[in-house]
Amino acid sequence: MKKIIFISFFLLFSVTFLYAVNAKDITLIVQGSGSPSFVEGFKYALTVEAKAAGYQMTDNLSQAKYNINFTVEFDRVEQKSKFIVSLIKVDDSSVIVSMEYFFADEEEMMLYAQLVFFLLMSNLPEDVTTAAPEDDTWRNKWLYLNTSFDYSIMLLLLNDPKLYAGNGVYFGTPGDANFRVAPLDHKFIFMPGVSLGLELQFLNFLSIEPRAQISREQALLDHIMYTALFSVDLKIPLKFLKYIVIEPYVSAAYPMRFPVEKEVFKKYPLYFFGGGIQIAAKAGKSGALFFEANYMFDADYLFFGKTDTSMKNPFEDFYPEPEVIHYNHSVLGFRIGYKFGFFNRKP
Image (tube, rainbow, N blue to C red; front, side, top):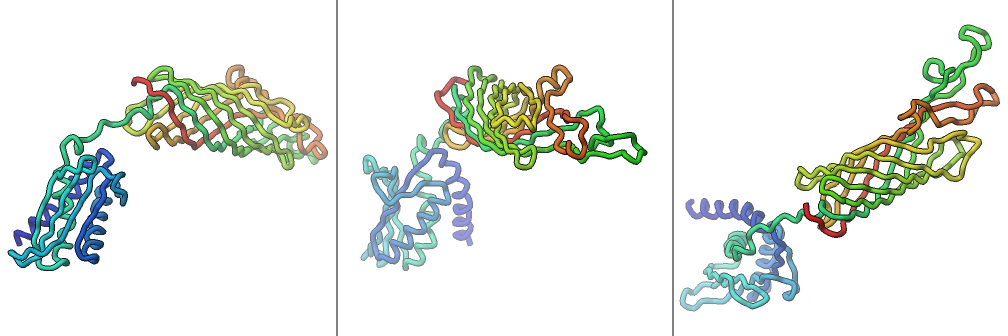
């Protein structure tokens, strides 16, 4: 019973310990000699334990930092098989630790693979097992190049003095025989696209990012247009979380549309203004995956209270007035992408 309790304690403790000591990448190789069936079985058992503990494994000795080497030989004095296992530092062939065990048959020794592995690795030098300092450079770069897939929704909300019941423009007087309501409503136009940005973090708490985005839109059937949006974001990087950077920002943008569909849009905003938030999570040594959401307004409407987006009445053959439909214009945008940093800066 004591033997079972002792082994169980080591098995339980080894899992916790082995994860704790692997703050640094350590590559191992396992080599052995003896009966082919035992060598292959024990190598496999040790490899499973090493991978579970987070170690890197290789079959190339020149790529390994440590070698777990074992041999099995028959001891004539004890009249038992003797298992000798050593942990060897590859670069200078120095033996870190060596242990010997006697066993009656090979199956008995296979049961102790996890315990043997734990005892070997617990003898690693302190400077190896000491946790490495956290690499925090990914969020403290002078420059970030980012690219993303974008999905925006253009919101065109009817803004017309003849708006009736919130869903169309009317003709005539309510109650008259000639009263009609045009089938006009608010428009929600989906705009997939891609963007490329260059973020300069000139202060630890402030960065600026010029960005170019191209997206596809279809305001009316068979009227496909593309928008090239050039924007500048002023961001405030918040770094109070270990692996996350949260960046709220304000943004100004200038759109260019092609081909210009004069028969569809009579007027279109010259500038947009708004803001958003980006959440970036560490992915790689110098980069991060990010998700972003923003909301942009027609600058004329936001600052001067007047709309600058108007569309030709698409139902003018049936409802000749008004010729132009006015909208309040805004855009809800989402981005998901990757940013890669260059040139470390001090926090």
